[in-house]
Amino acid sequence: MTRKEAKAQFPDAHGIVVGELDSLISTSALVAKANAFGPYDVVIRNAGIGAGVAERAQTADGFGRIFPTNVIAPYVLTALMELPRRMIFLTSGLEAKGAWSPEDLQWTNRSWKGMRAYSDSKLHDVMLALEVAARYPQVISNAVDPGWIKTDMGGPSAPDPVALGATARANLVDELARLSGVTRP
Image 1 (cartoon, rainbow, N blue to C red):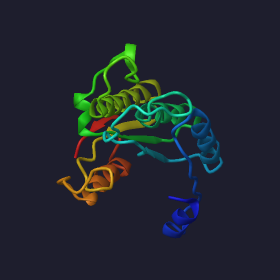
Image 2 (cartoon, rainbow, N blue to C red):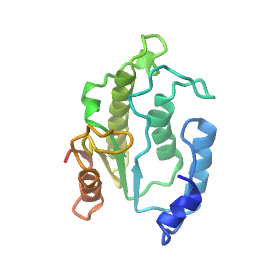
Image 3 (cartoon, rainbow, N blue to C red):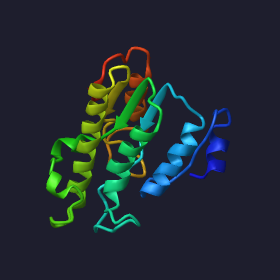
């Protein structure tokens, strides 16, 4: 979505920033733009590349495409942005199939399996949400699995409507969300 399209869709937005998350330079530039509109009450980390990546294509930084967008970008955004009162990291039910493989985080030594790489990346997002919760007690940090939602990424076979995923996120933003942790709808 371009900035112009976003402004047309959300005309009352305080500020709109658009950027890419597939390199350290572009993610850092996005943080600089976002910080200009802060501080924030809530930040929802909802960017990602799905499991349908058939091969381990590399970014300009030399990373596989899933890893920088799904893992490095949320970390860089968290590290460089002023901490909000609440942070929500979108994950997937597939994080349960993810593995912590610190010796090969980017799948450079293993045979490429896009679904497993995606699952690993979502496990890393849960780990980041829990680390933020432990390290910054003044921040309510959650990971939420919105379910398998009928979106461009989820596909038409997904059983859950978009509204269910939105409800899961809205419940975390609601004033009743006072504890850090992992939430499932």
